[in-house]
Length: 161
Image (tube, rainbow, N blue to C red; front, top):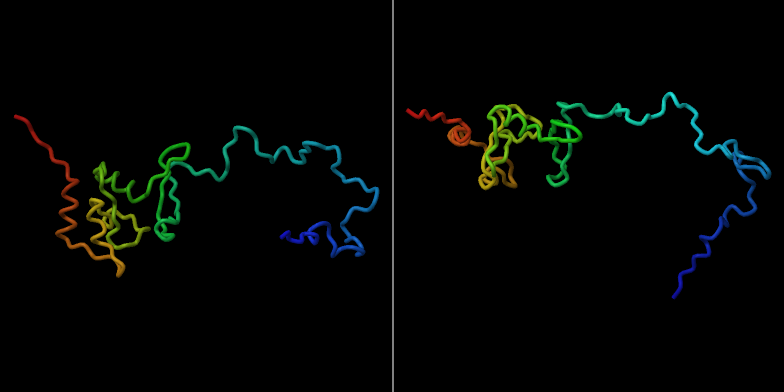
């Protein structure tokens, strides 16, 4: 069975109606006919090799929403060109402790993903992370747990005699 699409051909609703004020009259020529590549304001146009005014500088911090986490907001910092961005919490942790152990994630103690103060961050193994999250909210960490996870990042200097 074929669908009737005759109503789509032409504009039957406008048949017999007078044209609007801005419509071209018969014989009228558009002002830009034959002017291919017309440049009206070359001084303000984007020039090849010129950097955009909206381009982020290294060290700039921006807020993003993550679709995977239910549009939860996080801070990101630009660390290198051309477009290298890192989560600000990880950046702060690495700046303070020097590294993140493979398999660890940075957890916000108070649950606020925009509070990237070093006192609010803790790096813990990915396997332990679900313990502190549940459908009823964030389970607070005890001082004993915080000290245990922080002690993993203390550098131990061994002197050889």
